[in-house]
Image (cartoon, rainbow, N blue to C red; front, side, top):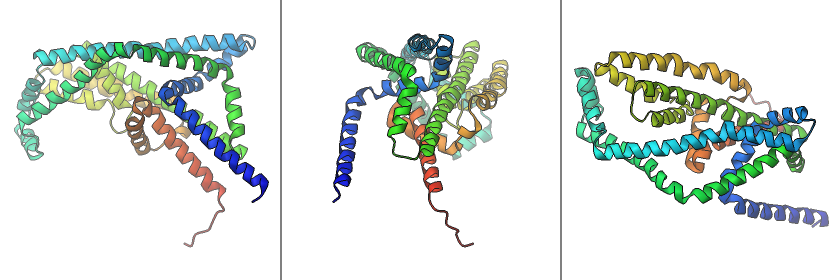
Length: 354
């Protein structure tokens, strides 16, 4: 065997081993590292702008960008999470004490349906009212119990959270300050033609910005509007419903309507005409139009993937990576498509017989 070829193979094996080992020791804090990278990409334009404004003083620009990032992106998430845990604990207590009678709402709603609708529910196997009441009550109790348990475990995990938050903040500062140099070194080390590396880098950046800046901003806006109208109409646990609508807005073909539409229908069926009309009109004209108005502005057409691919990759990412998966899933799917497109374009074109 050629001596140079043997050395190259030995170096490749060594690189693979040390890379796996390095990833292994970073695994406990992969979430903090991941979000430091994501936020670094999102706030890189602001960092470049401030560098020019501050006379190329990168340390001052990075510190200012970091403070803006914490105030705009991180602090609202922490505050909302704390309020959500408290709301979940309160909801669980109301269900356990019988103050919130979900089963009664289900029974009352079914009785208000026309005869043909009740007959249709019977044909679909949903006519067993007791079973349906028990299932809905069980789901609500389990969901609120999970949130309530987080209130207890939050104190136990405070140290771990602070460590992860400190790591993310520390890395984010350096990613903001040295991000361009780091990206350049990584690109130089990748053994691909420069044009292909540039395409993959651009795709990575565009998908991150499209997923977080576009999809997440749209979802947060829809969730905030949904929670607001629920609060105005004095619907219990408006914050929880708002967060649920924001989460469902991330999924194509699902959307926030799966939450507000049944509530509006319940109002109308039970004779609360004005709240039902207000909620339905607000859902269609305000919440429903946010996606059509904001998404084209925040997400470029060249970064859009088919809705079915976004749905599957988002659900798969959430299953494998937890909450971080709503970004990791679509990102992997986009890089998968880009890599195979580059590979197909690099292959000799074969004319297939017609």
